[in-house]
Length: 328
Image 1 (cartoon, one colour):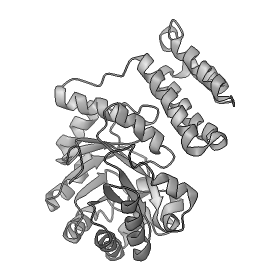
Image 2 (cartoon, helix red, strand yellow):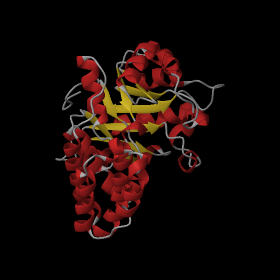
Image 3 (cartoon, rainbow, N blue to C red):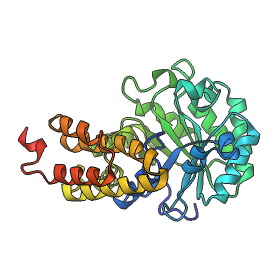
Image 4 (cartoon, rainbow, N blue to C red):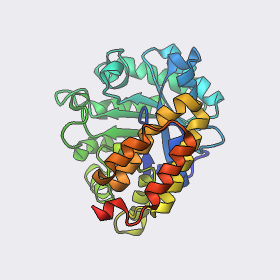
């Protein structure tokens, strides 16, 4: 695929609503992540220029490749969304057929499309026809274990022009319960010639190696484990290429990343909304680095309103000697 650092990506960052906005993806890229997918962008709302969806489609100039994920249930809006994403500077369009959220599936979007493969194919064809960009597809194993149809859909998607597939190793009805079954991704790999990426419960290099072995996939995608750890996808990739396990960055580097993410968030969303949105990233990163011993400090910091005071409190926390996690 033209414009990509590497294709297929060995390790990528999953699209996660409320997590993988432009500031977070900028930090993942700064740590060395090669391929980071946007939050889900509702194609119809993007066409109507709804502020939050337009914001989700941003990133041109700051992120390369710019991968924008589209969701929708009507061909005309998926096509228009693809055209708008291309005009916004996207390098790749990804189609969402994997989101299990009831608010999404009740609108016949996301993984609900796996219950109607013919309609799903029409959406795929409309998206591919509307853009010159590579189109990829993310989905689950099926709606439930009685309908594991990912391989059949994958074959039709490839024939329609999809260039890469990402498969989450659970059904929609599992949501995030149980463990992802990476072995059930192998039938998809066997059914197509395009690259397949394995997703679900990838939190370490050991997980990634197991997923690659059991699925036969060309790469892995890291999702929820990256919350508070934008460095994780790049760390897993380094471990896969060089051997060994992941090595977290020094605490000073984590502080730098969090302060940059905070400033970028305020810049993107504005002061009032940005302060609220940044709090969850602050909480996730404090939890990931310090755990339970920093719970009280996290609560205090997340109640602060003045950005200068927030920054000073974060510096004090990350500079504390001995570190809270070690002193517990």
